[in-house]
Length: 364
Image (cartoon, rainbow, N blue to C red; front, top):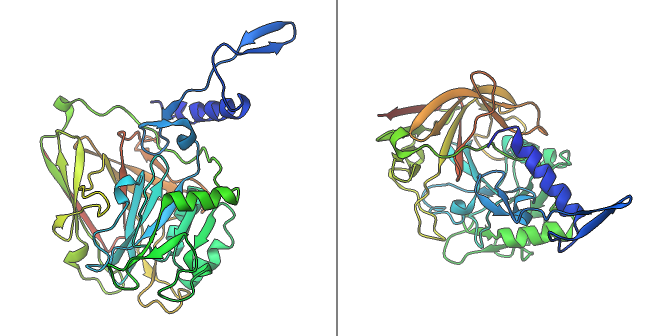
């Protein structure tokens, strides 16, 4: 689909949805002066804004929902609900430990977690997607920033929490199968219901990625891999528990994800995570965060502005740019000529690597 056509189609669908009543149908007439013209029913399905797959109109036009998901090894693994996310952003939190922001739009998950806290740069991405953001607290500066981001609907479990065993709200719960604090979970259904009750589940039509048809089998690579080593920028040393590897499968045109040397499985479904697209965003150096509060080794990653990006689709790699003009602007990806990069339909993982971390790949 043309990158220019996608937002136009979404806008048209939104207008039709708003203007055609609760049960529009072809053949209903509308009067325009002396003439009667047949109205056109809005399409029942639209290309998913984030995953490019056929999606019921009501889901395609809703607001992105971002959930902070923990990745501390081994206590938080395997996570639940990552397979249903349209997009997952992974980067460092502190101490060389990575964390995920799972963004849901086209699909839902009855169980997502374990849930943890937010950071400044995750707040910036949430604002860029104009998202509903679910988390459990955050660094001092990240918590303060959320109050200054009107484009984020902030659902913080800490607002209700009674103690480490009582969340004080049905939106979040603790699992008895894991130890505190690695046992906090939520549901996208519960979060959306709460957002809707607060009139916060509205459409944001700039939260989209352009998409293209997947390459024919003959045009895909035969094999290949991507490897990432996340290092603590304050004390550079690789921790193998957080090494990531994607292995390209030409038959399914997806990238099987490995973490810490084993296949990364969604605990809710038992399925191995295998996105259709992998994007690597390289940023400038990460530095110590002086306003983080009591969390040791907290960092700031420079994710506003622009930088180099690599796009992995169909077993190929292309270099381009990532950009987010400011904290309220959408995250965008362009090729060397400044054109929007079109992704394959399906899930996308975005790996954000400061200069202290390493990425390599090989395809044939």
